[in-house]
Image (cartoon, rainbow, N blue to C red; front, side, top):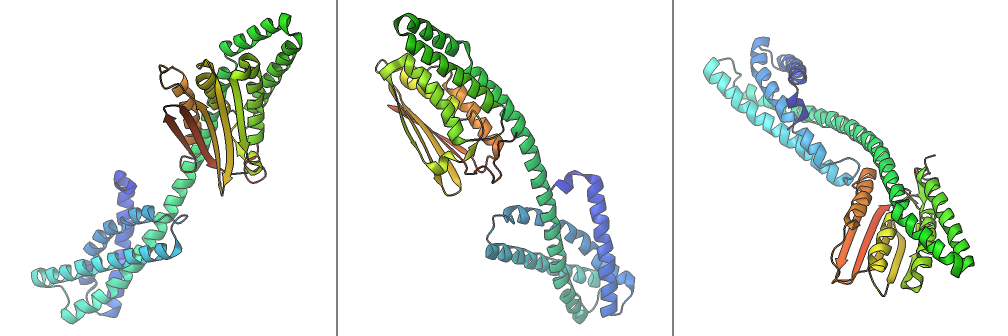
Length: 360
């Protein structure tokens, strides 16, 4: 439904404006073909009110032909075609109404007069419909701007909440317990490895807190945090955890929300390595394709292992953060196969200095 039809006051004001247009058209018809003004008003007034509702169809025309994404040729053809059709509808209605007035009330013009009036209605109808299109485009542009502003605010709130959840996940007692337990076990057997793991854990915690306080970070920084995490986990799992990386330089420079990739890597280690006796390999790939950044995290999976809780929650948090950024320009694809699990993120490829600063 057109928004105007839901507000009676605005609809009344809208129809009042069109009545004013009808008075002007009636005056024009009197100038072009002398007749009583009352007769001209009787002819044009009802037609103008009907055309006021016909012109509301411009709302759907404008929505189906967005200025920003519609090719110019298609846009011009669509708008001109809509205006011509609206003008033709008005002419047909005018012809029928003129016949009714002439036969029932006896105030309509003769056949020649009807043709002259219709010759005025057609171009006038096209012009008025064109104005309706222009006004609707302005209204839609304002609505898009307001929606973008609301989405930005919601994105900031959702991002902060998601970052806090991600931080809590990263700093959860199980992760700290496992790390500290590994350090304790290494203290007697391999003091050097224990010291190295303490340093890695400290670096990871500092990086987590630093990135979480920023609005945007380079993908290279996000992956550096993942390196700290993977280094800690490699001390725990040893050769059971293997990591393969293929990150293009152009992709590494792109800006991403902080702590977006980290939960995916944690899931990959948890479900692709910790659950498998033989361990597995986590693949991290990132590339830039035109204006899009693609990041993929892949891990093996045991087709016979029972499903575990926790995988879906992390993925859902990441999906919500992407949707809060811009649901039209971001996407998360999940591929579940018997022996592998793959998550691919698609985001706008924006580098620092091109609208993708860290937001501090």
